[in-house]
Image 1: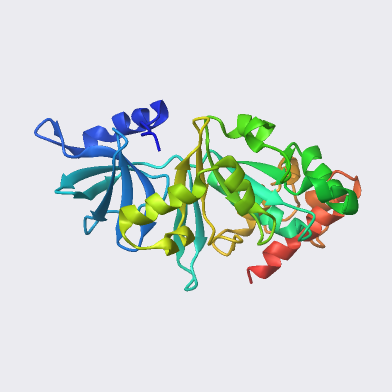
Image 2 (image 1 turned 180 degrees about the vertical axis):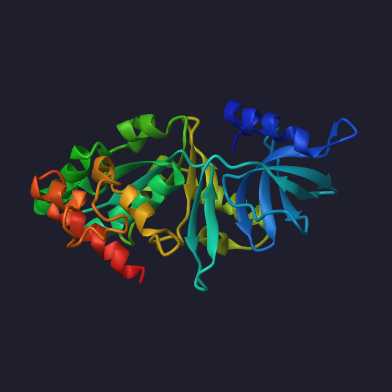
Length: 317
């Protein structure tokens, strides 16, 4: 696999933060890109493309795939001195309810749906809310498009999101995504794929990265932890110059860490009406002079999306 240099965007972020890590005028470390995190070990990619396993300084913030760091070599390994400021981060609560970062510096979330298993609108909406809260663009990828003839409801669902201004792409096992609009979309971005189990996310990644098994093997060899490393979030360089963060362990977004207002702000069609309700703590369910309900009555907010919002808010209690 060819070595990859840091992007111009990374260099700008690193240059902006370097003054924080200088000692007597010298940079106390080298720039690096986090490829994956495995327990206490962090696989980083140096500026020249070499990869090393590193450990963390005791007070360093936990890095995740996509993070930019400052690190210092120690023999064949290294130590991460500091985490550079993130542009964006996707986080989720763990089993104890503690919010943990999953991937950083993502430009776009690709939400993969398919006719089989049937797409779940509420799960799509959760992803969209999470992306909006993180300041990340989101697109919908309809996979297994060759099966859409038997699942017209998926086309109808996709059209709802297209009408909201969300980019919708279609692909299937017979098409080449590298020659597809999907390739143009991710060409110069860092993207993360999410979707419910069975939608074909793994096969889509395999088609975007034909040598995926070789890369996974190299990743496993680099950290010496065996093939189970495929269960960790990992960053891969795409042939067109973009980056893909694959996070197989993230099957859904729990939004318990967000406020009701943050969730409402994640529904793009709610935005013109937020703050216009009669009551400041309006639940958008029954109140008089609720701007959201009035917009629904005028047909500006669909019943399905309003119900989806209420379901998310209800699940937080």
